Picture 1: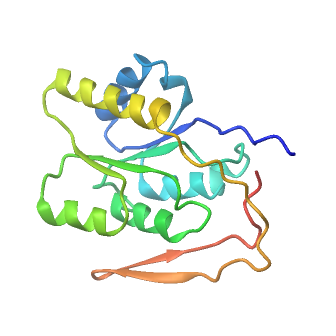
Picture 2 (picture 1 turned 60 degrees about the vertical axis):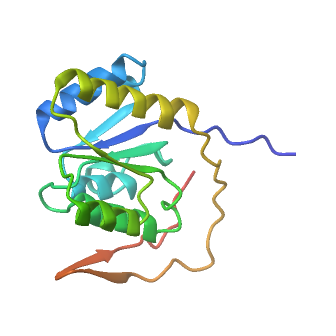
Length: 181
């Protein structure tokens, strides 16, 4: 019997506010998780990271154990990133936790309709923010057991699809090559 592949336990943090990045990393560091965090500053970079393209073309393959995602970001919003992740058969099993300042019900509903695993409103108080991020890190990186995915090459890559979000159009571009493990 083949040995089970080891699960890479990296976290992808998608956040455009440098203060929130610093606080999040500090809270994760308290749980000894900060050395496993890749930080990108917008949704476009998040997709580049996940698809190993552009400046992430040479990164070690493998999906993060979870994505900690802001919503309101330049270039590509958190909702658009989530939609792309959940539409892709190679990414859809990645847990996505939205950590955002928006407590608006329509945002919350839209994220859950698109398959988010958790939606957390950023606390304004420093101590509360740190506590929430520590709890998220412990649960999603240490307690939660994600499935180990054994990727099999597809006979044909999936065709690109267009997803309409309100008045915006998001294109999911798939590589002609299946992701390598």
